[in-house]
Image 1 (cartoon, rainbow, N blue to C red):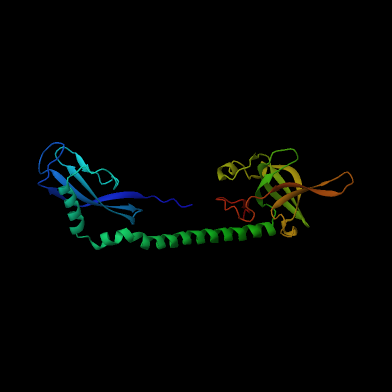
Image 2 (cartoon, rainbow, N blue to C red):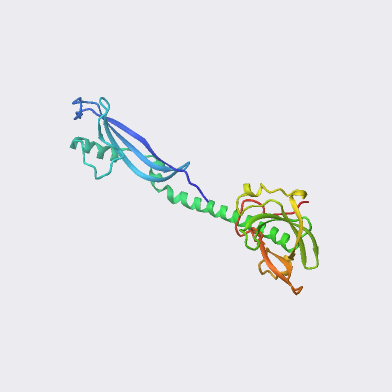
Length: 260
């Protein structure tokens, strides 16, 4: 997610005193000041020009005859002499090259921002692909000692988050143990860090899990424990799923751990 911080800047360009104009508020002559401003949106650099504006105030009493922020439809509180001076200052003020270009700066800046955004997306996608390759290797070639952050779901119970540790592999079956402590299912690294991966943090009871590489890519990362029914036949019970097994959720923390 991108967060853009911007500000609207109103910058004075030039000003003049209208020596013959009388303030309608304090009736003093020679204190009416006309100022020409330029306004633009800045995001570190000028991004989008919002045109030139004029303001008229009395430097003696502070009376505002024309607010530079006022709508163009606002009622005029100044004389025709002031109106002529406004047209004159706008027409005769010599603008620099930058002042001529800034209203169109978005034309130059926008492609640049698009390129930056594309670069971030590409890097993020590359990172996700690399993580997916890493997880695919861990899932398809499990080793004793691997630890998985998994959703643990048992019959008539609410799904919870648990660490699952691979103890040994026998043929197409993996034998895993579950952490003693569990957490409400969460996608927060802080929550998962509450669970210890120390040897003493796991129960001794082992569960049988079908080897991931023998699932033919179906339900990749899903945990199944195999129980024997009354006739001695094995049947799978869904136990949970490895978070982010394909790196599709783009979590900010690792969900599979292989200690070296």
